[in-house]
Each structure stands twice: as C-alpha cells, then as structure tokens.
Amino acid sequence: MPTRRPDPARCLPSAEAQASRFARQREADRAATAEDYVELIADLIREEKEARAVVIARRMGVSQATVTATVARLQRDGLVETQPYRGLFLTEAGQQMAAAARARHELLVRFLIALGLDAETAEQDAEGLEHHVSDKALAVFGKFLEGR
Amino acid sequence: MPTRRPDPARCLPSAEAQASRFARQREADRAATAEDYVELIADLIREEKEARAVVIARRMGVSQATVTATVARLQRDGLVETQPYRGLFLTEAGQQMAAAARARHELLVRFLIALGLDAETAEQDAEGLEHHVSDKALAVFGKFLEGR
DNA sequence: TGCAAATCTTAGCCTACACTAAGTTTTGGA
DNA sequence: TCCAAAACTTAGTGTAGGCTAAGATTTGCA
Image (tube, rainbow over all chains, first blue to last red; front, top):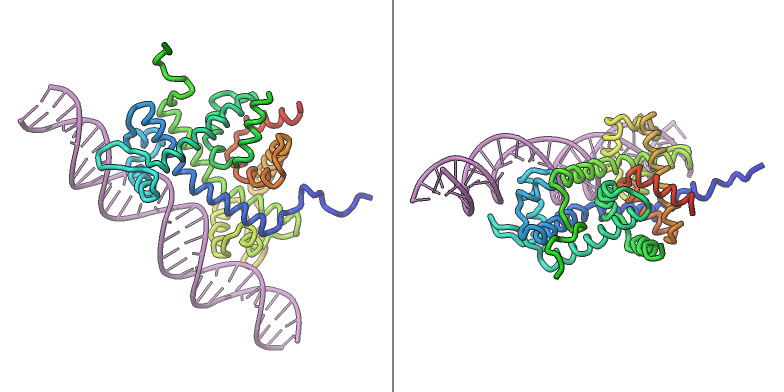
C-alpha cells in the first residue's frame, strides 16, 4: 500500500514564502509599464531620432491621453524628461533601464528561437516574459545559448 | 565601409504589429490575477479540503478585504462560487482554468530546473512567467524536456 | 502669412486591486 | 450556553492605467 504522504511536488509552500513570491510578482507588474515605455522611447530615439507621444500612442495601442498620463508618472519617477510639444528624452536612469530591458528582451528572443520557436511568437512571448524573468534565469538561458 | 542599412534585429516592428502585441500583453495581465487566485483555491481544496478567504489573504500577502473584493470579481466572471462564511468553490470553468494554470506552472518549473536553475528561483520565476508564455512556447519547452 | 491639421493637454469618467477601520456573523471552548 | 475570538463584509480611500471629449498649441503648406 502506498504511503499517505502527498507527492512533494504537490505540497503547498509555506504561507510566508508564497506571500513574498506574490509580493515580488506585484512589484514586477508595477515596473512593467515603465519598462515598456522606456524601451519604446529608446527604440524610437535610435531609429527615428525622436520619440513623439503620438507615435508612442500608436505603437502601444492606447490613446494620446493615456500616454500623457503615463509619461507624467515616468517623469515623476525620474525616467523621462519632457518639454511641452517636444519629443521625449530619457534621463540617465531611463537610459539604463532601457538598455537593461533591451538586453533581456534580445537574449530572450534568441533563446526562444534557439529552442525552435518561430520569430513572431518569440517576439510576442519575450515582450511578456522579459518583465518576469530573473537574472538567474537569464544567466542559465545565456549559458544554454553558448553551450549549444 | 559597412552598409548604412540598420541591423535588421534593430528595426522596429510595424506600429500595428507592436500595438497588437501590447494589447495581447494587457489582456494577459488582466487574466493573471484570476489565474493566481483560482490556482491557489484549487491547491487549497486539494491539500486542505477547503479554501478559506483568510488563508488566501495570508498566502497572497493581501488583506482580507482585498480577497473579498477579488473573489466577488471571480464570482461575477463565473469562476468561483461562494456562500457567506463558507469556503470557496470553483465552477467548472474555474476548475478548467486551475488545471491549465497548474499544468503550465509545473512544466515551466521542470523546464527551468532542467536548464540548471535552482528550485526556489524556478518556482518564483514560474509564478510570473506562466501568465505570459504562449502555448507554442510551452510546446517547445516540453519537446526540450523530452529530447534531453 | 495665415489657417487647417496635427499634436498635445486637460477634465471627467471607469475598473482593477491595493489599504485601514469598523462593522457583522460564526464558531469553539470555558 | 454564551461570549470572545476568528472569519468575513462593508465603507471609504488611493494609485495605476485605461477611455472620450474638448480645449490649447504648434507646424506645415497653400
């Protein structure tokens, strides 16, 4: 007769451990919008010389009013600089965030494609995964890419 | 002299493609809370015979009032059934969502551990990644696990 | 050069998901 | 049996991130 002890893989984690995982999760969720905007602003400045709110609205698929509000939060948080009716600029902190986000994004895309995923799905998935993947996980992804 | 054409990997996607990726992203974000709750409720029912709001609050790291409000949304959306001062139950749809979430979660954890990640980080990352990983990506992760 | 179109902001609204504080209902143990 | 503690709800508040509609500013072109 098999033991009554449940499969360890099916044991619940301690309440404290689980709560802190969810808390870190909520933290990452809050940072995600900022990262997406900052990443897009950096891309636009590199590719089109300036980042206009109207272009961000079109590319994010939101209204211009939403961009105005979100950019105000980014400015409050020291990531972006604006002058009314001018393009947007990244602060030093914003540039660092954009560079880190871009690095994560590109490593993820290369990793997913190396595993056999099509490029379009890899892009879509990387967009979501990049905000929730730890540095440790990125490191093992990188090692996998090297050692392939 | 190198060509002036930018590195293709650095070209921006079309505005429409990018907007629809962000839209799908927002969709996934909205679904994430529901999936987390439903998954936890299913775990509690399996492991402890019932899912009490007070336990969910402790494990999610939020107040009981937040659980009440969130559960009301889950009920409105046909995922959960409640009677006041009784444990929570999953509807048919809720059970299906929980089973799917659990399968995604476990495949992700196995995949991350197979790549060399420690178990604790694998759990933490899976928590965040499971809401943003496509079925296609899960399929290639599964193939990797098989063919290892 | 001057006005129409493009761009941006403001105002007002909504939902999700957090919180605290103050109730209400249930339940278990003395 | 009954009351205190536990569990749950309600009320009121705040922030993020969406929206539309309408006003302000800039810019480009006829």
